Image (cartoon, rainbow, N blue to C red; front, side, top):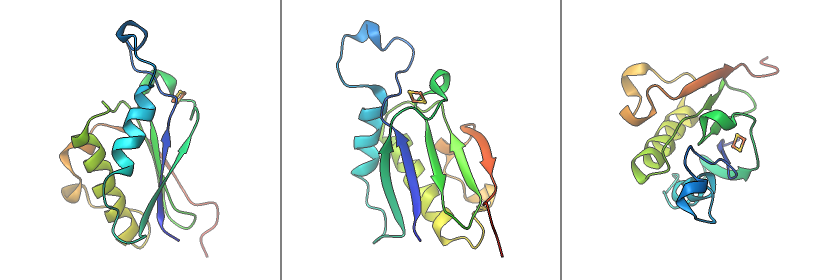
Length: 123
Ligand code: FES
């Protein structure tokens, strides 16, 4: 199973209403992430509405049924952050248990982890 990046498409960062745009920050971020090559199916993406971390948008989850999964937030919807997320997800996909050594983390991912979720079952 590939690593899946679940992107909250309804996140609105502080000041969103003042910017008078119709597109949410989360949708903008989702579109950016979806444009980045994900290595022939080892990483896939999907969108979801509200992941219940609204105060810390933009939010994503990096997950796999059989590995550690991670909730991340507080991303600015920019290409650098989107690229870092996809690159981290590729490393997650290549790992045996979802743990990626800190020294391999893309810089733009650091400081964005909210939670680590263990797999439901690991035989
Ligand atoms: S709207 Fe994105 S977490 Fe609630």
